[in-house]
Image (cartoon, rainbow, N blue to C red; front, side, top):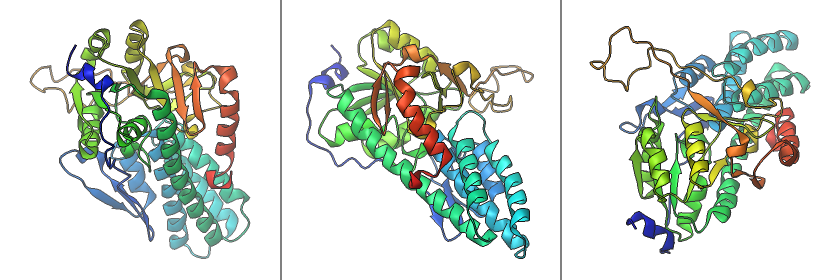
Length: 378
């Protein structure tokens, strides 16, 4: 038995775990966003005063992760509304809404796979159309909605942490993929939240984090977060994960999600599907942790999820001397894991084991209501 295997039998003193929280937020007309492309070497918070720079940050992966994309998009819509008013303070309501709708479309299509971004923009734009009052009052309503979503996602993370920890204990050895911690939310994270809660309660926790190709979010971001929180961890190559699962040294795989279809199929960072297959083959629980805002009632199954392809020029983690200059890259940002491989789904609403259309129905209704009105109003 390896040293790590003994962790499953250890109880340790409760630890004052201090996971990251979103290093940014709204302040007096400015949206601060931590530039995740600079991590882990540089913690650079960029002040955004217009929607266009937020769109560029989303496209360039300076801000990434389904929940935070919805929140950042909502605040970008506020910046867009204020910019329209600054350009022409005398605008009538119909003209203001026409211009706002055009700006909203640009924000919503910044990245295609995570449902939180287009859902938040659609919901808040509808709110603007439905809210009586002047353009200035509509801009204020959009800010209140964005702040409500911000607070909702923070509370959802805390609930995911509690529910997930209760289901996972006393498991101690976890494997995760990509980055589903505080950097992708306004709270303590999704997939990492239960692990923080377990450690704070005095349970031993050890995490193996896949490096996560092609952009190394596991190596750069998850390891960064776990180091900050004082959680023991190791990074492994994506190709080593199946072999590790075979050894029996992992108690559960836990990942986040960018979109969950109505039948329970899960879109997440590319490589997740392979992990799910390996976990299934070796009898290891495969757990998905995500807020209800990531459920998409309008997408019947995973075949209907648009998988984003990253451009050929994103080859920063390939040795330029190891391939010809004309090399073409197949670089999907995500893949889809069938629901039948998911052991349980953790949301702020609780735990759902072996999710399918029927079992998901109540949660899908709640997700649909969230998509129709700002979370603060539900």
